[in-house]
Image (tube, rainbow, N blue to C red; front, side, top):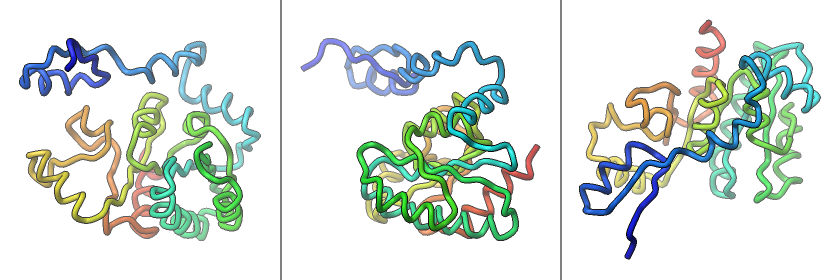
Amino acid sequence: SIDKLMLILQIEVEYFRRLGIPADFVGHPLLESLRIDSDVKAPSEQRQTARKKMGVTEKGPVIGLLPGSRDREVATLLSPMLDTVRILKSSRPEIQFLLPIAETLPWDPIASRAIEAGVTPVRGAQNVLKATDMAIIASGTATLEAALVGTPSVLTYRFHPLTFTIAQWMSNLPHDRYYLGLVNILAAEEIFPEVLQQEVNGSNLSMEMRRLMDNE
């Protein structure tokens, strides 16, 4: 029923053209929305500017926690993220954590859990990614935002087991080459470590975050 399909990911073009659908790659809108900071010369300067806006001190590493914008995502991912906070703080109490709460979610119940764990709740995921040294992110557009602003991240997600199995089967890729994150899919390699399914817990997430912190 369409005459032309305009795509925001280059890798999709050949797929749709094989189906006989006229398709062109037109670029990703994130590249436009992130140009507002084109005057910032380097990621370090960008971080300092974002931190001043958010009132974040420079006393230690700053980590962002992005559990997603849907109720189900937060219900699944917030607890292991907060467990990760407790584990990391036990050895590195100077680490600061920011948790952006999406406008689509209720503020009070999420913010209270965050504060109890020593995490600062805020609004604005994109600003958090600009302000932080690294992040733990639910798979989605935010992973691409993190890459574009230069924030090293660990990607995480947990599907219903049947959904995940079907997705792997439909991808027609070997399991050791199956990536969930946009950054990894586009690069065809693991740029952001992926912690998925039954592996999603505080122990595994904190281990990956320590690897990032120790990696110059």
